[in-house]
Length: 190
Image (cartoon, rainbow, N blue to C red):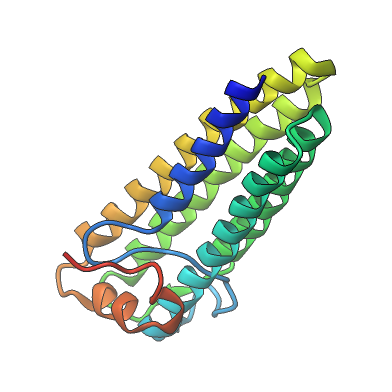
């Protein structure tokens, strides 16, 4: 069971690292910006995206720390519930974003909405794993599913931000992510 817990903790770290981005723009945020019909200034939109991911990443990291401090069936169950809750919040925040006021703003919104749907599907996998977890073996199986799902979520986030970079021919979103305060810890430059 301890080796599986190590895999789960590693998966949490992979998700945290995945949120840290690669190229020149990355992620993280709360969706307190406009509606889907009104454009939001690009930097405000980027701040909201980044803050949603910062909050989610912090919650995922805390769940991983919780497992390392309590490597038990209850610890795994609590971490799974925390991950589900954090992902629910992230999905709601992302879906609440308007479109950025850029040339490719609607495409960016569509990409973020698609990411929210993918993350919600992943959250449902975690929920199903937690619902069927019973006893030590069930908890270990749930931990394995959670770990694999977190890796998938990290890949989904990475893919979404690659798509954002691809549609951003003018560099407007890149500039917004680079300038947004919430993105400072998430944005890296090559």
